[in-house]
Image (cartoon, rainbow, N blue to C red; front, side, top):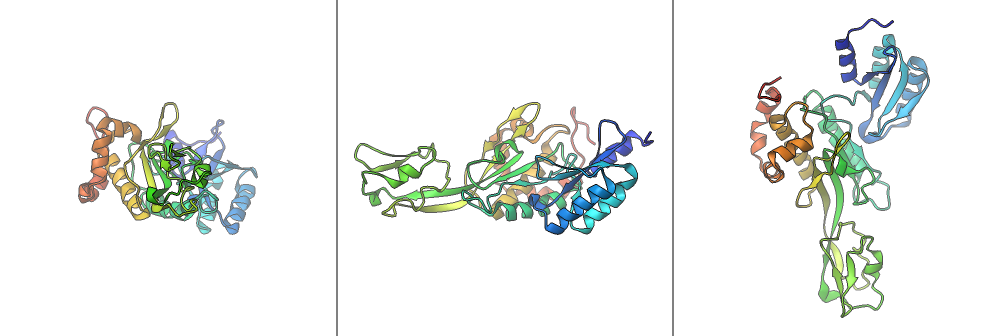
Amino acid sequence: MLNITAEERKALKGRGIVSTKNNEIFIARVVSPAGIFSQEQIQAVTDAARKYGNGSVAMTTRLTVEIQGVTYENVEALIADMEAVGLAVGGTGSVVRPVVPCKGTVCVHGLADTQKFGERIFREFYLSWHTVKLPHKFKIGIGGCPNNCVKPGLHDFGIIGQSVPDYDPDMCNGCKKCSVVGKCPVHAAYQDDTGTLVIDEEKCTNCGKCVGACNFDSIEEKKRGYMITLGGIWGKTQRLGTPMPGVYSEDEVMKLIEKALLIYREQGITGERFGRTVDRIGFDNFVAQMLSDEILERKQAILEAKLHLVGGATC
């Protein structure tokens, strides 16, 4: 029987080494930037599975892989082998979790280089913030378009690619068969009684399909960027992320993630999911803080402070 304490098991889990049901064998969770592995890294994972585990590798929902059947005495050697090829073993705990981008980089619907952006977020907020304890886990999902394949709206911080159309009705010729209407996947584009094209902004998801579709150039792209959703939860209870107003650049999104994390650490309660913190504080209040730079002035103090527990205690 493996003779280690509950605290030692907890510490191992915090490093991405998770106990299995029999408490004798472990799973090692291997994390790559944005779910992309080089050939060398995949080979290293395969070699580690054969050398330190039972030869099996399982995929996770967060684009990580788990080496199965790892024994306690092999843990440190396995971690060293993964780090030698630029892979991290982790992805657990009340911290920023591995970033999940869709395949927008190569997808025909993609409006952004999601994998490159995902790696930028990974390095800034998964690696650099990995020692910053939060009230609960914090998940970031990036969708390259409104198809939402990786369900960014169910992440704590959802990022969705946007292409905002700029429609000039004066350029519309009222074609008998409108090419834009045929392109719109959500039926936000239609022709009125005069044959003039109308775009229902309430229905429009900014997918970009209409941009350039008009034979008379009535629709161009006004802005390309990202929509942000806050507070998505998928688990024992669910909460769909609430959209922030506006469309943001990549650099702006990076600042918004930082501010969201600082507010969450400062004003969240230990054990409280991010979405519940947003609801308790009030969405409008939370967004107002995110759009201000005032929280950044307290950054160092927030990072050094203890977390809040229920009842006003700290830890």
